[in-house]
Amino acid sequence: MSEKSANLPKVDADEILEGIDRWVEIESPSYQGETVNRMADLVEDGMRTIGAEIARRPGWDGIGDTLIARAPWGGDEPGILVLSHLDTVHPLGTIDGVLPMSRDGDKVFGPGCYDMKGGAYLGYYAYRHLVREGKTTPLPITFLYAPDEEVGSHTSRDLIEREAKKAKYVLVTEPARDGGKVVTSRKGSADYALSITGRPSHAGANHDKGRSAIREMARQVLDIEGMTDYGRGITTNVGVINGGTRSNVVPADCSAEVDLRFMDPARAEEMCGRLENLKAYDPDVELVVSGGMNRPAFSRDDGIIKLFEHAKGLAAEIGFELEECETSGGVSDGNFTAALGVPTLDGLGVDGAHTHHEHFYYSSLEPRAQLMIRLLETLE
Image (cartoon, rainbow, N blue to C red; front, top):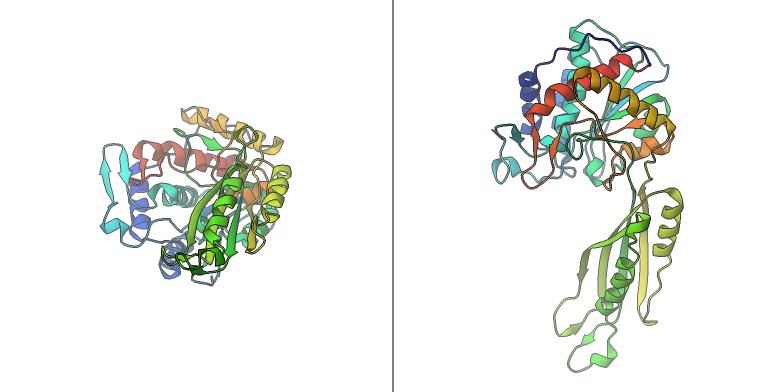
């Protein structure tokens, strides 16, 4: 890492805000691939204009394309991967309904503005700033824009891992946490589906002939929820249940969806094993468990600590104190890259809040953009 410079980048928060607004105007829910591709078209056009080399892989199963943009310098040596996603959690029509784009003092509102179009745009702006200044960086830079991070990154994971293996550092533009903190570790996650098949019967005339799938599921739910162990950083959550047809019919079918979070590979193996080996209490019903690990744990290692300390020093140059959120329960595509052993710094996006009134703070734009620019300029 190079010596710090006193020459701080001059950035324009209003210009950044205008760019973020253009990105937020294009709603891009994960499973609306055509709208995610409208976002990808906009980003691709912008990147081409400032000289980036573009690669784009079509998505499938309703998912949009994965976009890769490379700075035209540095060749094939290990460089910096800037990792972002273009999909959001809000359904189409949110911008014209419950969450219109607006500003109230320091708060800027809009669907996906915080997670993560604000941060994704900061990465783009940092690169554009360098190009406009006629600068290159010590390392080559690759930008990857995933179309499906919010739903597991099933179509983009292989590309994320491929690019990470070629990188020396990964910078993730997910939003900041807890008042501007960057993320240096995250729990891993696994997703499971339970399907139970019982035996239907009339609840009045032949109740004893039936085998209730819902009754069996109720017992399984209590067992699964009981696996939560806060002291060990393990949580299990049954978030969705569907079953039955009518109140006077013993239900033959019931299904559930389970979210598992864990701190490290050993606990992942233990907990995935427990879920995958669930057995039915009632021998007359069938229990099928499917699923598995989605994202490995993102562990804070020496490389990540060194990268954070470098960023902290740059932030001090700029004029603010950068803190770390050492463990986030939420997952990101940074989980994939950190698990490969590549120093990964996450949460480099805008500061704000991800609620039904999603917003970011205008005051975070300038310092966060400066930090991104300085990281690109100084990592070597």
